[in-house]
Length: 95
Picture 1: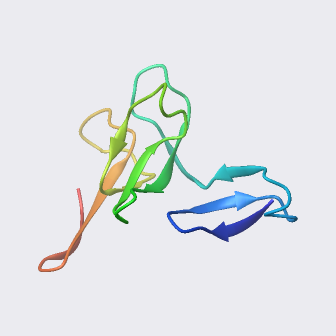
Picture 2 (picture 1 turned 180 degrees about the vertical axis):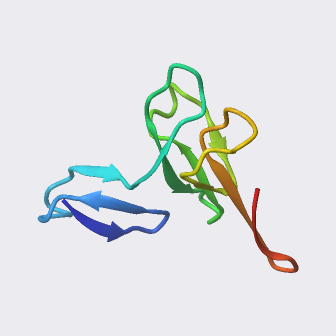
């Protein structure tokens, strides 16, 4: 499997792609926040080009967020990851 950049997202593909149609989404190494879901989050894009992050088990698990998850637990509660918000005016902020 090698990394490829598609029209809507980055993904892993067979080295013989596009003749070989085997593909997998790139995993971020961040676990899904839904209880009893052990899948990783992956980066996706909408048809309009907006990036979002969802569970790799979609549509069975419908967890999705717009801001990039970071693989560090939140210190005050049980949330398994932090979120990086990037805005034009304020820049990058980790919450």
